Image (cartoon, rainbow, N blue to C red; front, side):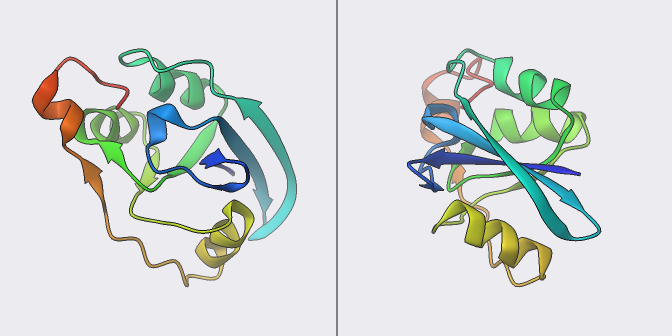
Amino acid sequence: MIIAVASNQGRIADHFGYAQEFILFQIEDKNLVSQNNIANPGHKPGFLPVYLADLNVKVIISAGMGASAVNLFNQRNIEVITGVSGQSEMVVQDYLLGKLKPTGNICHQHDQADDSDESA
């Protein structure tokens, strides 16, 4: 399984679409086996959910994300976890141990400003 974390300098990014990078954590048998940092290819409507799905991501973690992006990830059977903060690797470890406490923070700014902004 691959978990993607929207990150800025190793910490959970406040807003998914504007993260500096995505850290892809490869998980096998609930153990972290590798990680790969990829630069955010850009905040374009509807692009990031498709891009990360093509990388076989099964879980995405961020502090905040627009409702349209959440829906696009869900349509691709990708679990979305929002309302999280802290060091990216520690958050993934907490997720694997069942200790992660997300708040479900949805960024409504983009949904109200532009309903077509699906990568929020």
